[in-house]
Length: 42
Figure 1 (cartoon, helix red, strand yellow):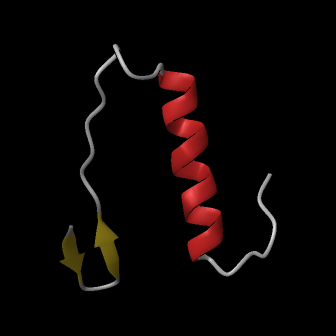
Figure 2 (cartoon, one colour; figure 1 turned 180 degrees about the vertical axis):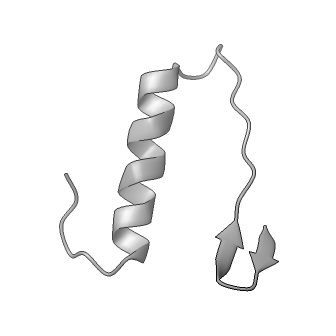
């Protein structure tokens, strides 16, 4: 995690043996929705 003046940057990597790109982005988008204060995720 890198803290910026107006936000943060999170680096992440993925091994294709555990998941594919679509599930990775679904997880990342769901995680960001929860951290944005949404009670339900899409």
